Length: 596
Image 1 (cartoon, helix red, strand yellow):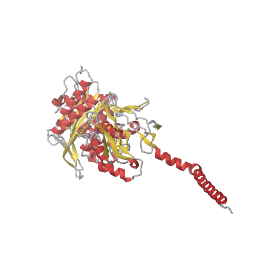
Image 2: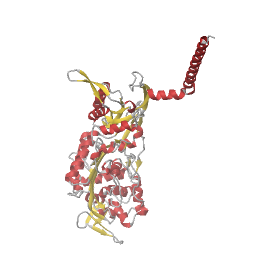
Image 3: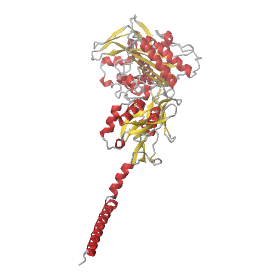
């Protein structure tokens, strides 16, 4: 019997069965891939070929009142890599003659070259690559400049396909320390100080995102970049500050501060009719481009806004205005003024230097800066009434600027004053203010008794051109126009006939000013020590007040009287009058009796 045909049919049948079985397996697998696992596999493939990255919205500029950039943004780049594709490569090098050669480079050699170009650490880059070898993303070095970016890009284009880049913006301060105390600075964790922090809602950009596709070899596919969210730049913050005046003011207090061995100094220039701050200077001050140069954290901001001190005799101008406004005194009110005065509770006050008993008017008391004299006339006004005036002058609250670090505690309520404090507050001891508060007192007097909020910011201009101006605020009437104007006239005697007349006089202009030498309390709370705060606050021209200048030096070591501050006040005020082309005075100062 011939079994060959049967055997052939059997083999054919078996072969067919195997084929059918294999086809069935493939069909089942294909169905599993295309139907059951389709979504999951599609997502995995997208993760392998589609890369998403952040696009950074540039931070807005901070500008001076003329548009000069005080804080701006420059383009920087993060150098990144895909650890999953990091491998030895062969790159094409071009020498000076244009000759091209192929050079083999290991991963370590690539990282070493990136480190040389950027100034980064090859060891840190290697650690970033090996932390997760299967990752698609790792930072190698952040914030490199454009030149370094171009050099690394050339390295990538020569054959290192696993290097990538992220564009970002970095902060720069073109004028260095000029207004650095006001602008503040941005650190790795964002805005750290000054207006950079408090005005972040204006300055901050909004980040966007984009995606691109990468091939199996890790190379970005040309033309595959898609923007998924547009980045939006931050707004421009315009200040009231005059950049040139700010620079000159900073230089003036730094020069004198060093000359008299002071610990620190501040100066404020304010426009009387608007409350706008044209300069707010501190010494020492921070250079936001290199914050690490500033060793004392207290110098990172603005002590003019944040440092509380007992202002001393500059306060007497306010006390005199209170007395005039309340009807308790006139410019010629008389007092018999000895060198010192004792009180039933055991307290004692005295004038700065010994003198025989004098017969002074209120104007003469301001001229001589007599503590005893101002207390004799000031006691006719109750402590509560004087406190109420201080509140109207704005001394119980932070300034309208809302600068970072401003004291929230103002002058203590009169009910908490003891009898000695009540006396001391008349001449600026036992009460704390800031330089900005003192400037505000003199702005009020120069503005015919109307206090205007201090203004540092003009407004914010968004990227789309929308302007948000500084909020409009109404002035507060603190004392009558007569009381304010008369106080200014009385203060002219300090410049024309006081001890510092030679240093305070500005030829051609009538100047009203008040000097101050305040004792500083000991840190242990055991009373006053030998340290002083010396200052001058003044207004010019006195007949038509335009500008206020306040200068103060803390803890001078070689000259501990207001004579140390007078030349700097003169220098700054003279510059202000010249810069803003203020016409010289044409009317003589009123002759107010200073003795009787």
